[in-house]
Image 1 (cartoon, helix red, strand yellow):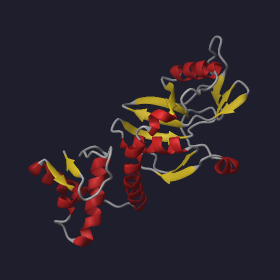
Image 2 (cartoon, rainbow, N blue to C red; image 1 turned 135 degrees about the horizontal axis):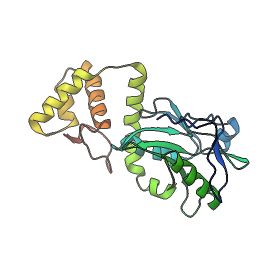
Image 3 (cartoon, helix red, strand yellow; image 1 turned 135 degrees about the vertical axis):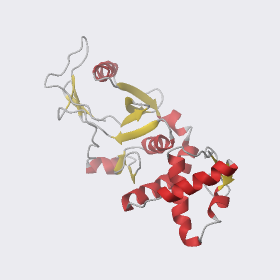
Image 4 (cartoon, rainbow, N blue to C red; image 1 turned 45 degrees about the horizontal axis):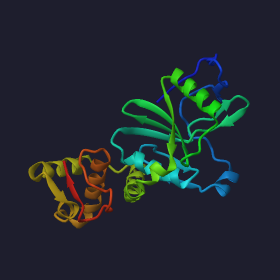
Length: 233
């Protein structure tokens, strides 16, 4: 995910100058001022694809991050990744995304609202020069998938906690894949109730890790993860 800027920032015709305040495009979550945590619809959560405590400045950003966790094409993301100078003003984009090897820097806004046109042109030119892509993301488009995002929320919480605790589940993952190879699909309850009670946490954690990595699939677009959820390879 590393991107370094040269000492001389490129200049674009008919556009505002753009540059990273610290001279680097290595994404690093910018600290949120205390005032903003009180003024904004502010959320924090440990994530998996961003394995730290993530800060979100709106509910749409929070939901969007859950959708990134659920997206098989996304390998990593960083909230509030840069402090940029645009002309004489400072600007922090909402998110940095690695999707199928392509790097996207995104700004979330309600439909019909955007950044100033001069800023958009400058940001698009700047990131294109860095082999990256800048895009506006509609809050409404994100919230259309709110149910899916909220169904992934407890899954991400469990996975992030286990990641912090260093819990290993490779053996359990292999065991579950073998079972599914034999039957192609089973409910969560069928996969978990066969094992000893004390081992069910590790089995379910292994199952959730397989789901998160999309080695197995389950439809969470309408119903949450529970013992009746059908999983398959």
